[in-house]
Length: 352
Image (cartoon, rainbow, N blue to C red; front, side):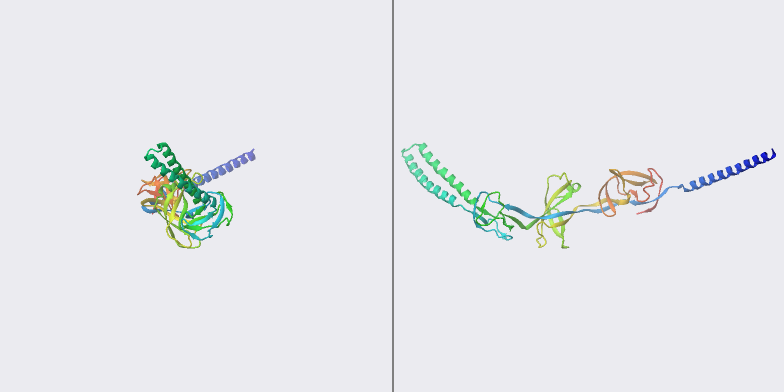
């Protein structure tokens, strides 16, 4: 019994030692955990919002176009008897490019002119007879009607004859010809093209949100591949509606200068200043917190963190414009955004 009693005492003492050690270890862990908890306000850096001069500039692709361009086609069918299309050459407005055979129309015109002469003499004699009562008013009116009908027929023939002459609609440069002398053509045949290249248009599109800022007469700069020169253009018109598929607005500008690099179809990099604002609110990009479709910023107010919803505008490499949500003089937090909670105590260590 003595041995068993000694064993029990030893076991009890060992249990007490182990329990004491575990309790001491728990106290150390609790002390260690308590030491990791931050004490006092969270140190952060801030940025004081002030007004800045802002020029809203965008860069979009564009393309040069002839100021005027059209296809040359015939209004009537006929055989070509004269062809004056010099490919790539400049022509003046009204120059005859193609002449169709009009011998039948010329013969018809001569016949009508002879009939008109006879009808006019008949009407003149009947006018004299009417004065002395030799004929009735109705007979004289019929002779005048015949004269007027012949004059109308002559005008129709002359119009048809004019259609046999295909003229340049404006000053421009001719494209490649698609017909030859002696060919029989119809209105479906493309004869050539003509482009007004003494003036050019610049066409480009701007995103939907900038559409309302584009105004007629606004200045535009653009560059072309192969040259470092800056060219100027002036906005002349915009499309009446936003394109649904691209959500953009088409813009056309008149190119001011004439240069050998400015050729139709050339790709252009368009730089456009959409407006200037002297007191724009700009904050660092890192101070903006995305929240789904919304954006927020943390404002330092009386030592506390205040989360506010903001609406942003244009941005550059480091800053973003705030349209709504902030005012001049506010201090936004730029560091430690992940650890700040609404209403948390803050300490500004640096203010920019």
